[in-house]
Image (cartoon, one colour):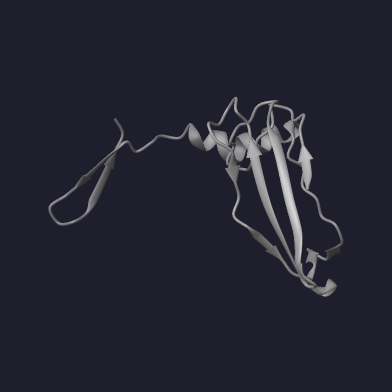
Length: 119
């Protein structure tokens, strides 16, 4: 089991921008269930932001031939960074979209069409 603490509260849990605090605890429980299969369950506990711990579904991992482990021709360990340095990219992909007009009402017209309107 990997038990991680000490996160920067300015980062996000995922690309949707779910928040967390500096008190978040991330536990990753992995186990080998067969010679060619591993399982992983993740638990996030953050009593400052969430009322109950969040537990992921069980993720299953199987060996993949090296020839299939590529990204644009690159082999090996590929890593993404999810840190405050990514804030401009996050704003572009997530937050800026949230500022767009929101259709707050729907009206079904007699012929079955749906009309959306802003309030």
